[in-house]
Image (cartoon, rainbow, N blue to C red; front, side, top):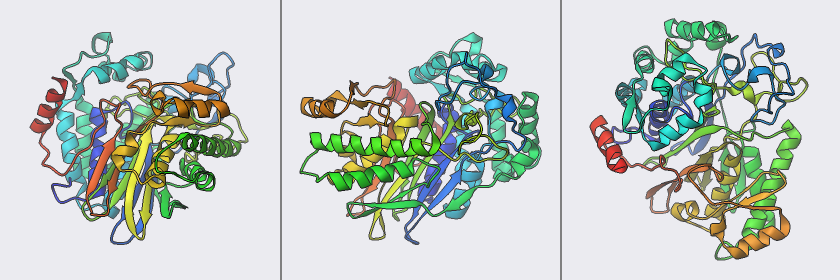
Length: 494
């Protein structure tokens, strides 16, 4: 998109759409999230909130508590048949199409159809299967085999697909072409919307055509704070932003940074995170303990920046692929407490109002410094907050920050630390906290999976992604062709 004359918004939205094909277990048309943009000319940050909402006809009686079922990923009591976690009853009205298209229309430079074109080319080729895709499918086999349409795509012959193959996606490809030709509004009104709702209701969902037709994106100013002379912008109260800002406030008050990161750094970061998560738990009762998400950051030559996080919530969301459209759907009913009387309890039409997603931007004197964010459920805020702090507390480059070991702290009674930070730091943390020592690995992702961009004082743009993720990466402006994408992927595999 940058090569075609687009800006950071075009690039981020194109990437988000492409993930429908190449990382479907994390996010897609059936998901929701936040986009945070810095507009260089206007010197203004804006939030596009496209979180999903419950059906107007949602009935808490459909989700009776069952002590025989395990607690949900949010920590809420288990529900009979896990109806709020898997299957058609776990699906909320998805906001991804509305949110991404609204960001493109209001802040992008290219057309919806042009931004969708690479995704359609990828979809016609199919889902590329490598060892990491096989791992993701294998981890979700019990969920996927419950849904015939999902099993047909992801479990050919009843098992995960073999690496070095492609899974055909004919229904999703047709849907993407419809969206490109008829516009994003077709997802919420018209024939495509009717096919979506027909499949949902045939499976037992209470989502109706009116729920799609009345879905609305929310755009607003960010929730902002200050740290080391920089303005920090986040996606607002429903995001992880309040926790990030509270952590940074604590750190500024309790840490005087030296020339390098030391044991006192990690103690201050851990205390700040624990305090912030304790505050959050006091507001909503519990904190999400699992989930799968994608984050992307983008910057362009004009200084526009985007931090975009969106999700299906669980790995493969609800495990439901809508048969007529090929859309993999979220399981975001899990965000809501099945018990009445809480801020996050279920009610008709209610929007998701508590999330760990935490896209973040930093600016100073009207110029964007960096954009960061991460995937990884309850690990997202600790990761994003630490990267923000490291960049500002110690003046690190993006590469230095991304290669600095991290902790994970969320007021859970212990602190997890990467042993790469050294014996002195571990010893100091062990004096203050119950300590878990765990390496940064491909799986499980114990320290989140971040990506970020930075524009330095010379106007040079930098990008970085999680060093332990085999599917993360950074890209610069260059022509996109399907042939080059295939050649690069095969080169990586070789």
